[in-house]
Every structure is written in structure tokens, then in C-alpha cells.
Amino acid sequence: MEDLIRQNVRFERRDKEWESCKCRVCNDYKVRAAFSFSDTRIKFKCFNCGREPSFTKNSTKMHHEFREVLNGFGIIDNDIDLILGKAYFNKDQLVLAKKKAESRIEEVSLPEDSYQVTKVDEEDLWTIVASEYLETRGLSLDDHKWFLCSKEPFRDRLIIPYYKDGKIIYWQARSFLAETKKRYINATVPTEPVIFNYDELNRFTDASLFITEGVFDAISIGGASILGSKLYKQKIEAFNKSRRRKIFVIDKKDKQNNGYKLGLEVLKHGWEITYITSNNLADVNESVTKHGKLYTIRNLMENAATGFAAQVALETICKNHSAK
Image 1 (spheres, rainbow, N blue to C red):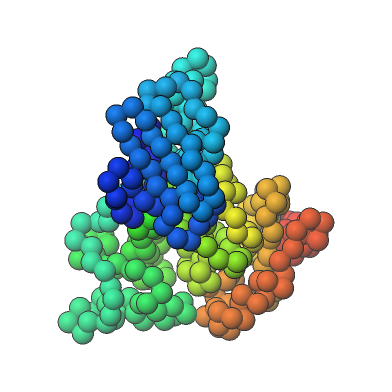
Image 2 (cartoon, rainbow, N blue to C red):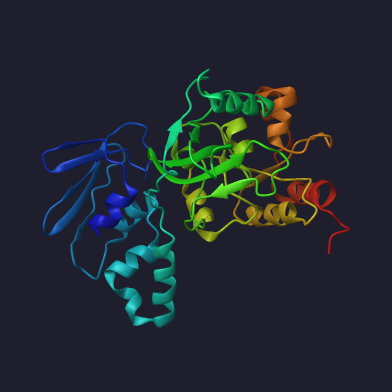
């Protein structure tokens, strides 16, 4: 259990037996919580919300308050039960638990010889290419920790790392050339739990959390991305643990109705949906490029809807009725 906790908790400092962190259960913005690991017990304490449960190592039982703490840090029940040994009493549950464990978020390495781009270097022409490419998308070198690579097949690509608690959990390498058939080369790890801008889910703020399909859309408005048009259960669980107002941005141009289907799905979980008003704009990133970030966010907030109003918007604006 200790290893599982250390994989999911970002510790800030250590004071004797206690290792400090921010409490993800009460979403505290200060470091006022801590874990203690001994040979026999694991203790948790938060001076903000007052939670103080503990767990006996090698036990097959866990108090619900300690489980709530682990859930708050993004540790799912199947991973917990696999360690407790409960899953072994049911073969189907064991298979499911193993599958969940295999898709756990872990740190990954960038392609060999990757280097961060912080400014344009006249001696490295690829930094100029990267800067000019980002400019066409209304972005700059300061908007994210971008990387380049000196080796093929990444030489003519912009590497976009995905971070969680300061660690890289995924990456995509986007081609600078629009005509390239394979626009993205991706890290070869399970994507079920991967979210771009993961730390935004637990950031202490009253601002709404915009959720997009594409990574450039998310970067453009400071939101989070689900990496494609499929919303896996692991991602739903992670987003639902966030206390922020969740607004999903629908892709109106999707001819296969994936955006429409995603909209129906997120409404079931109590999220809101929104969209860019203009039919001449393909997505959020294009809106930011042409009209700016403030205009785009205002437009998204004005169109945010839930319940019946959201369903009407999906049917009339987002659904392609000619699709099968």
C-alpha cells in the first residue's frame, strides 16, 4: 500500500516521520497534510479538514475514511482492493483489477536527446521553426514546456509533454508540416487514465475547468484535454473528483458525431457542455488565434448549458443528422 501511495502523492518535504503534502480530499491550497509510514502502520493527518485515519499494513480490511483519503489522491478502489486481496475471491473482479492496475499513471521518458525550448536560438533553426509554428496557432514558447529532439523521427516535430505533479506522464510529438499524414507520434503507454494538464483538476480556484478533446485547445484556454474523442472511465473518475465546475467543449465539426455522443455522456455525469458560436471557426484554438483568449472564454461561458438546454444545443448545433 505504501508503494501505491508514493506513486500517486506528491510529497513536498519531510519532517522526522511525517512526509508533507497538500490534502486532495479537502483540496487545500497549502501544505498542511502528511503521511507517516512505519513498519506496521500508515497514518494520514490533515490540519485543514481534520481527517486523521490510519491503515495497518498487510491488513485485508481498510477503514472507509482511509479509503476516502486514497480516493482523494486519485487512487482507485480496484487498485486498493487488489492489494487488500479482496479481488482474489472473484475471478472476474481480479481480471478487472489487474486491468486497472496496468493502466495506472506512471512517469515516462521523453524521446532520447530531447531538449526544452525556452527561447529562439539563432544557431538552432528548429527553435525558430517551433516559434513560428506556435505563432500560427496563437501560442508562444512561454505557454507550455515545449521540447524538440535532435534525432529522427522527431527532428521536425514539436514535443508536447503531459505533466502530473511535476512528472511527465505522456507526450505527443506534433509534426510542423500540415501535409504530413501522421501528424502525431505518441508515447507508447496506456492512454485510459491520461489527461493533459492533470494538475488543473485539483488547483485551488473558483474558475471553471474547460475540458477539450485536443491538446492545443486546452493549452489555448488553460483547460484540460481528454486526448481524443473517447472518454474512459478512469478519466471520468478523475474529473468527478475535482471540485471545480466542469464544462466540456463540444467539437461541432465532427462528422462522425463523436462530439455529440461525448456531450450526451458528460451530461450524465452532471457536467455542462459548451461550444464556439461561429460556424467559421473549427475549434477553440482557431478562435483564440483569430479573436483572442478573452473573447473565446467569454463565448464559451455564454454558451455553457446543462439539462434540457444542453440537449437542445447538442441536437440542433452539434449533431450531424446525415451521419449513420
